[in-house]
Image: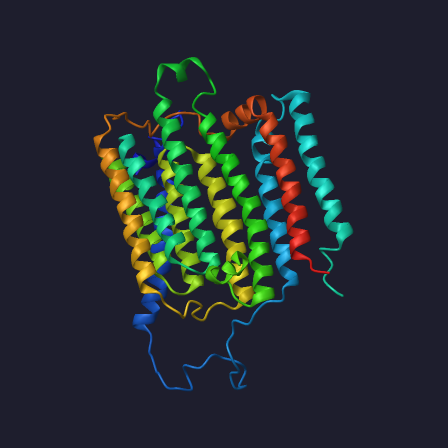
Length: 131
Length: 110
Length: 164
C-alpha cells in the first residue's frame, strides 16, 4: 500500500493527485453498486398504482417541472457575478503578505468597483422579492 | 504528450461548437456551443503554456509559464460576465416573443 | 504511457459528451452533457499540472454558469421539445461544412513540422501561489479592468432583467 503514499514527493506533480482519483473512482463505484445493486436484488412489484409518484394519496396533477417565477432569475445572475468575484480572492489570500500594500490597494480598488455595483443593484431594487 | 494531440483535441471540440451553432436553433444551445468553443481555446492556451515551460526562455523568466494560465483565467471571467448579460437578453426575448428560436429573430432584417 | 491512456480517455469523454450535447433534443440533457465536457477539460488541466485552473473551471463553469443555464431552462419550461419544425437540409449543410472545416484543419495540423512535447507532470507554474504573484504583479491593470467589466455586466443585467 505504501506505493500510493511514499511516492508523493515534495515537488509538485500530477501524480500527487492519484489518491484523489482513486477516491473519486471509489465513491462513484460505491454509489453505482448501491443504487443498481438494490435495484437488482430488491423485490419489485410493478403495478400502475405503485409506479405513480408519491403525493400523499392525492392524485397527480400535471408536470413537476413548472416554470419558475422570473424574479428569481435576476438573483441567479447576480449570484454568478459575485461568485466569480470571489475566485480572485484565492490568489490574493495566498500571497497576502508578499504583495504588501500595492496588492492591498489593487484589491481595494477591485472591491470598491463591486461595491458600487452592489449599491446600484440595491438602489434599483433588484433584490426585492415582494411587490 | 505531443502538442499535436492537444491541438487536435481542441480543434475537434471547437468544430463541434461551430457545428452546434450552425445546426441548432435553440438560442440556449447556441449559447452553450459558444461556451464550448471558449473552453476549447482555453485548453489549447494551457497546453501551449506547458509546451513553452520547458523552453530556455521560460527558465530565465519566472512568470513565463504562468502567463497563459492568467489569460485563461481572464477568459473565464469574461465568459461569466458575457453569460449573465446574454442569458438576460434571452430571457427577455422569451418574455416578449414566447420563443427562443434564433430563426425567429430575423424579423429585425426587414 | 499511463498519462497517454488517461489523455485518450479524457479526450474521448470530452468529444463524446460534446457530440451528445448537440444530439440530445432535451435542453436539460444537453446542459448535463456539457457539464461532463467541463469535467473532462478539468481533468486535462490536472494532467497538464494546472491545478488552480482545474478548480476554477469547475467552480465557474460547472458550478455557476451551467447552473444559470439550467435555471433559465427551468424558467422557460423547455423540457418539452422546442424545435418542432425541422429543416434537415440546413442541418445537413451545417454538419457537412463543419466536418470539412475540421478535416482541413486536421490535415494541415498533420503536415506541420511542430512536434514539441508538452511538459505534463512536474512544474510549479499551475499552483495558486505562482499564479497569484503573476496576476498581482504583471497583470494588475487587466485585473482592475475586469472589475469594471463586472460592474457593467451587473448594470446591464439589472437594466435588461428588470422591466418597469
